[in-house]
Length: 155
Image (cartoon, rainbow, N blue to C red; front, side, top):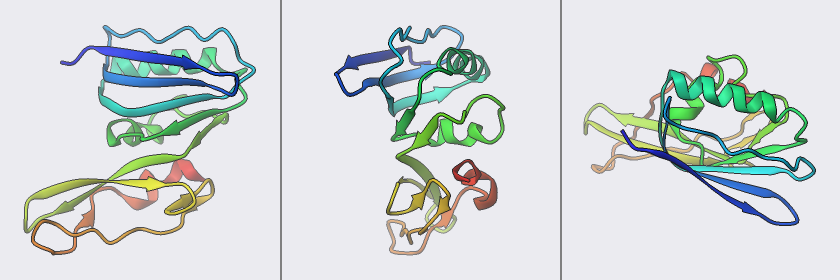
């Protein structure tokens, strides 16, 4: 299993956290002492999260309740799939800018993760457009999630 690390970059406008690896029982979250700026979290390189990682995440979010806004980008399926299933994983001060949605082709036995972006594919109130995706043979792929639950955190 990959180790976990977080790059922290502070500017006058925000605090950017970039996650790398697997969030698990061996991980630790950064201590954020300043709460007068938004926190931007880039999860592009988050590979895995297990039940211990979810617990750690929920504990960390409790410590961030005074932060006005936590903004997510490049959220992988491994994180998004837990948002609606685990209480405390997603809180009212969190907003999504972009996240990955899995598609699957039975015929080609292929899976693709497609980046959904705010303003193009969704708003904070729900899904706006679900793009058509093709496999390597040019055949249409299907969403590999339950639409009504996977996107429900947007409402």
